[in-house]
Image (cartoon, rainbow, N blue to C red; front, side, top):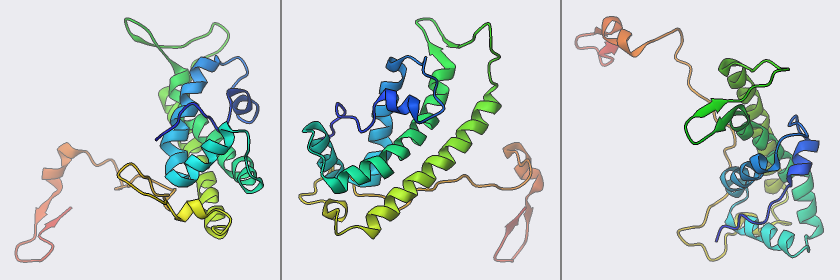
Length: 196
């Protein structure tokens, strides 16, 4: 069962170790921390190791090996993913009648292109830290038997992922879907019949 009440990092530590300002309302950050833990950390660790950490953190009885895992690997990864996930949430305010952009009389609001650039940079860093977690656990799998052994697995079991990097596909140029019919040429009996 997924436990979202036990967090591996608090909002104060997130603010202290990231670019997120001290004046950001904790109620805006706590949901992001929960989401990051569920969406990124659970698949990174797998259900068995994740649940082991949740049990130890909630019981205030974290083993020495799990302390190293949490402090040196999981928490830095969570911080990077929280920065990534919070960028849009902190840029917009969800109200009864609309979604509004936040503004201040003393600062200039970033454009969506600026935010996208910062998000790309943040996700690259987060994926780098996630890769460090995977490599550490693979190199030390004897200390973390729950990482590779999921025990009594059922349909809700999430196995640890070994793929931490994702990227888009660049097709080159400014290819627009409306352009495709004009640019495709039929190549007769050639096995590669359609060519751009």
